[in-house]
Structure formats: C-alpha cells, structure tokens
Image 1 (cartoon, rainbow, N blue to C red):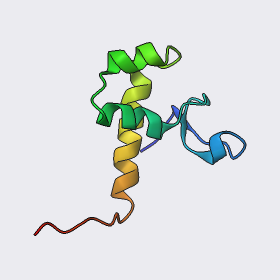
Image 2 (image 1 turned 90 degrees about the vertical axis):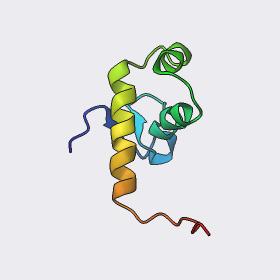
Image 3 (image 1 turned 90 degrees about the horizontal axis):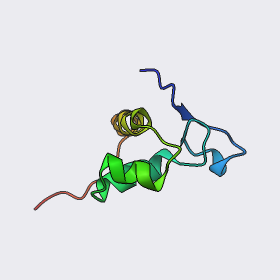
Image 4 (image 1 turned 180 degrees about the vertical axis):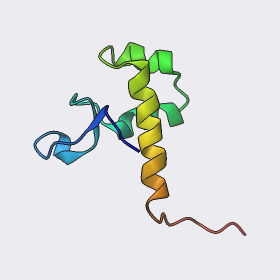
Length: 76
C-alpha cells in the first residue's frame, strides 16, 4: 500500500510519521480519533488537515500494527 500523505523527516518531529510534511504526527490524529473526536472536530483543531489526511492516517496506523507484534495482556 502506498501512502502519499504520510511523510517522515529525521529533522522534523524526531522522524515520526507526519501528515504531508506538516508538524502533525499520524499518532496525534489517530489518538484524537481513539479519544472519540470526530473528523470535523479534528479538522477544526488542525485547519491545515483535510479529510483525506485523517483517512490515510488511519490506514497507515492499521498497516503499521499489522506489521508488528504488539504485546497484549491475555484475558483471563
């Protein structure tokens, strides 16, 4: 899968994946969604973002977690 809106730059935000070269990390956008914010609320908080940025951030996060093992607590 090719991501055209996700960029990394070792000199910006410590090399964290960001949206279109902006200083808005993918993790921030995904975290806001996880906290229950709507796309409209995120766009209001970050006017430089577009709906497509949010969608691609979510796709990027989904791809990232499918590529790694994440330690989970076993349910009892």
